[in-house]
Length: 261
Image 1 (cartoon, rainbow, N blue to C red):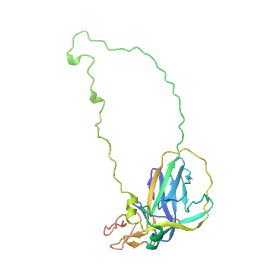
Image 2 (cartoon, one colour):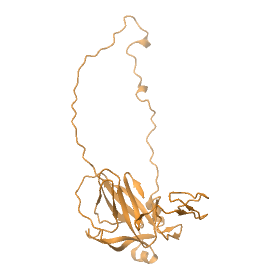
Image 3 (cartoon, rainbow, N blue to C red):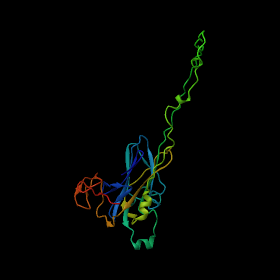
Image 4 (cartoon, rainbow, N blue to C red):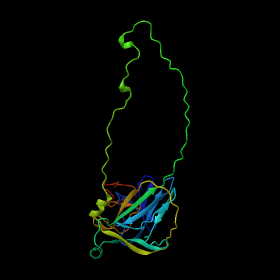
């Protein structure tokens, strides 16, 4: 499951949420899957999905209520909101490549979402000014040393008590799309019929779009995935074959990384 802001996106197979590691999700070829979008905001969000570089929802924005989730399991095509084909992940074989070609976005699930903007109620504040005479301290009748005369010079160092550290540098994050382009061996095609239906929703104002990207992979280190890697699946070490907890990153016996990318 990938998080961004207060929105989470996950891939589900057989009703189970799959594990996401560095933007990659492992599932067997031939699996039908769904896209789960969870809204943790206190306002609504709307989203649309694209798979393998093509629109999966045909430009239709789907609304998710506050603190709720929506599981999208099928394509929306030709304006059909009553039924459609499920998402099915298959291997991109040489025969498929010959008939369909190869796309740089193969294996990529892209979810674009927008958050509702609630208009802020403008409050009027009345400011009343009271004029009081300014009282200055009386000068002493006797002469003072120049360093003790009033007023004393103002020091600018008291205005900036904290040092200036300069602008923050943005961290460099590897793109899941670049990782998918190197090993994009699976694509999504129409699957079985789904009766999932949608109804129109009222329009609301939103802010700018945000994007969450996941990469679907059917092979791991050159070996075809035999079963989906769920978040509750125990991980087996490739070196000593010991079973480890589902949230572990390294083997508790030999220290080998449990998820090989």
